[in-house]
Length: 236
Image (cartoon, rainbow, N blue to C red; front, side):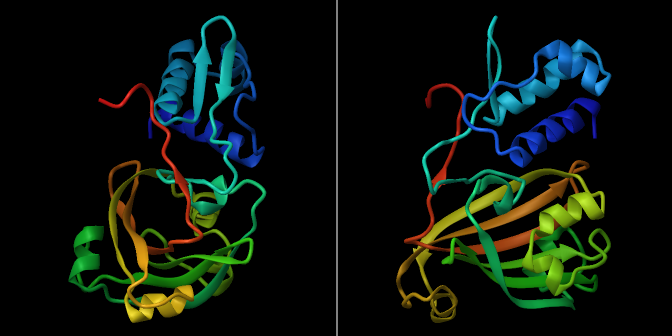
């Protein structure tokens, strides 16, 4: 990972951990240069990256400010930091259904860029926000990269564990969205009825070197799922 990318990640993590709000001011450029002991060009690149991601905005002569949605109940759809990092004061809990080491099927192996003979951790859980069902999640983690998971880890934040305990740095993700209707099995997990509407999202999370390590399939409860997408500039 390049230095400016590392600093951008640290600034974003700070914003999330401190639960900073829309319009909160960040330290000025010179302070950041001293704090991270890097050149002006490195900090500038880090801030430009965060600006493109919709994390901050800059006003010439005024400073650097946090850019976060402030409509209650809405989550950032295109976050690579996991649910927990963008829920604010809302309480996220999980009902862990399965944590096991398995061999991937062809679809999982292709999405993770591995062989069907390789080991992966399969994680299945239902996630709740403030006690309401949010989604059903089925995820696969490359065991060579994430060598250990258990129910205690999975019940909390896997991304926190992967980044802080294992030192794995998440680079980017590819997301595939599809609106459809629930199967009987999906409906049972979400407390809904078969054929009720749903949003399904398949996501492949990559390391900074581009290697996939997590393939997830999430099915959302239509009544409890609200998202925000932050963009820069007008849509064309």
